[in-house]
Image 1 (tube, helix red, strand yellow):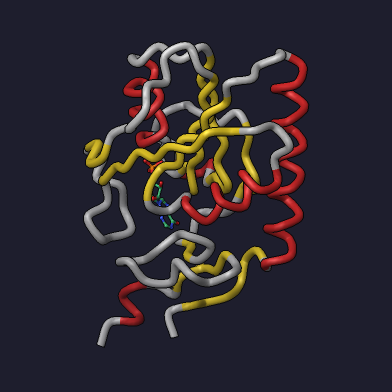
Image 2: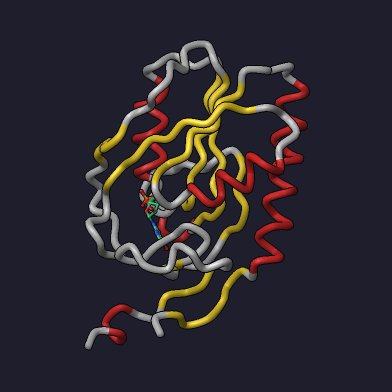
Length: 181
Ligand code: IMP
């Protein structure tokens, strides 16, 4: 088994997603924004985005953007490539980038720059998880679900080499070296 221990159980995830949705609803209600687009960062954010969308009262369109940076390992290469771009125009719209986790911060930084070029009315970000100790660039999502320690985590959409995305909780991966045959 590649799981060391459960870090965030399923009920706590669901509770926090609902809280984030209330915070986003409140922020959007205040500024009377109506044309909300959730942009999910593939693939890790797809489960979080699906739950967040269903918890929001504000109607939102959905689009996805895919990036690659890790090449199957657990360290960011720092080389962020857009492998699938937005499908609809976001010009003049209110965009929230929905990320699974902010680690070095390089992906979020690159995405904000890339998406910003398309002239949205507003551009904010919501990350389920953040590992502040790992930051290489000083960046935070506008909304963060949980700050976690410096450990590689899996589940609830997050993978290790494409495995474990379907786990209903967030777990710490056993050190990869230890699980090699
Ligand atoms: P960053 O560019 O270093 O901030 O990395 C962001 C991306 O790396 C995330 O969107 C994830 O896809 C991946 N990532 C970073 N840490 C983890 C982790 O602990 N588990 C799974 N994926 C991770």
